[in-house]
Length: 182
Image (cartoon, rainbow, N blue to C red; front, side, top):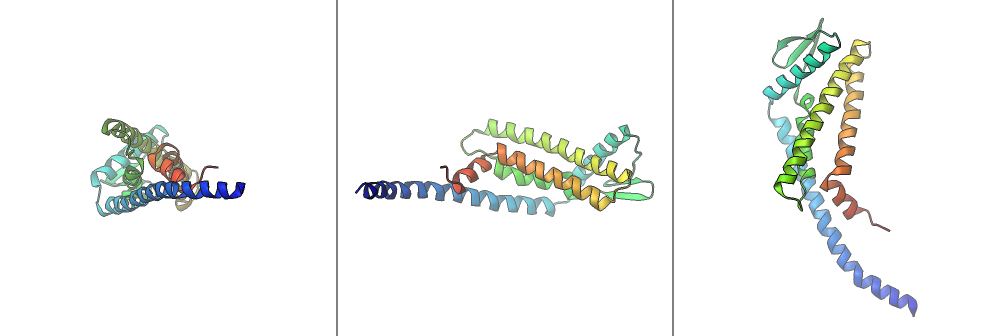
């Protein structure tokens, strides 16, 4: 008899929670679809001005480390005979635009969301310049470019994802929609 009562209570509460989880899942799926569109948009545009300023920031930062990079075009720097062409992925604009739909908190106002987006933009800029200069430093010490850039990029992408997961509305929604609290 006691088991029947527990079963009845469970069956009464499941539809309510299932509906809530379905709605949260729908929000997560919508955010992921907008994320994909944002990243596609990021790579569809040329971002020439951003590639120039990213390479210029890197050039000035590595100058402090006594590494003379010479500008040979708006998006290309040279160190000796090696040329480093800055492409869209070097700007982290794909990461930033991909973060926007995940960061937006539906329960917060526009000023709070704008403040979070601004802080994220500054954080991603610092992370990106750090990863690019670290890759150049590793390359300068004899590490192959594909390896230095890949390792630094992998660490930077992982760090960006973990920060987004912990701090964003998306992280809270995924944890609420897909992971049952016991």
